[in-house]
Image (cartoon, rainbow, N blue to C red):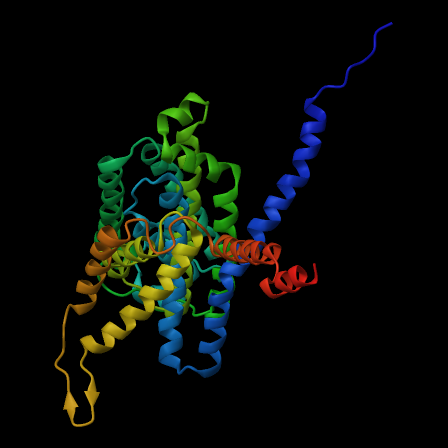
Length: 384
């Protein structure tokens, strides 16, 4: 008679489940904590700011979604990406073409191919189509992008940006070329942008702490070691590329539905430089860094744009300083590369920094408490 011996893998798997659930809750809580400043800023702007500042803040939330998309791919894989503007444009132009009322399209794109000038669908369905098309394009291009690194990735992603921009400019029957595409239904507001930004922050944090994110960061540290352990680096990069592209496309959809008018120029190199500077300034490797960099640089750039147009102080007016914002963005990148090459928040997330700080404080208090009060020790010695 044989006695069944329990397999050791079963209890190990059972013990791993609570740990995995705890890690998931910690990531979720960390993402929500990171999103708190974003919610507070949005509420303050909605309550006290004038309409023009609401418009500026909305653009900052769009940039935040794009920066989060960049962080998902670049921050985890450490592979350069200069093609985010292409996916922002794909999302924006898809909803513009599909959701704009037929009467408006007959004026703006009367010769649109495939009968698109006679088609208008619900804005929510158009948004889904925009994300779907961006995902398909990302998957097809990611098959190549996921296999390269370094200078090759930089050139390849920038080439993608140039190709998509050229399509927007030269396919005038569908995209109106350099002219503005107008008549897009304005169906979103700042509240929706804040809500989607919170969701984006949480999802980016969950992705970072997921198995895919952990393996991807490990491959960035040592590609050969990751491959030696059987990690499919190409597959991981492809997943991050597609997810990041859909974040960028979401930003494009929001932008189109809020502005009501889009232009191909809005999705070109200036957008790439701005969002890249935000990510580099805040920190590539953390979601908190992406959020911090976006908030900080958005604020600084708005102040600089005010100075750029000239400021009146009493009877004295400063001269216009054209090009100051571009100079500032370049300066931010140079400053970060020299003094903070890993960004302002380079290693730990906000919640991890708080836990570390409170942990050190608790340790110091415990150590000081264990030594006792010197006065009590003197009293005890006198009593003896």
